[in-house]
Length: 144
Image (cartoon, rainbow, N blue to C red):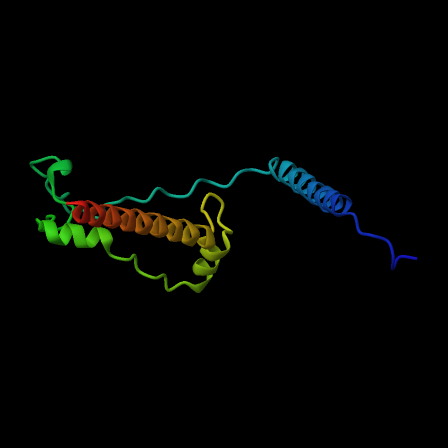
């Protein structure tokens, strides 16, 4: 009654590993037998600079002082700096990454639903704080 028998994944994995180990051992024996044969002469060493051309001159200043081809950082205004800090991050064009982030499948990152809940609670807390502050301000103005 092989239909109702469960396949044990550990036994099947052990079986494949034993087969792989036997294969590797046979390869080791073949290499050991091939090692007794005379070795082939080593391949010729290739020169980096073929011919009699002279090498280029060495730079006069160290390479660490040379620019890496990057442009100088532009001095951005305070407004540009602030607006870049509060701008939404770009939406990923990779749909698989979006589903990983939304489902929380990446270890170490919180699921998107949790992040939304935290943002919603933060918004509600600041809204309540602002309403209480405005009520207190109007209350003091009415008392005077």
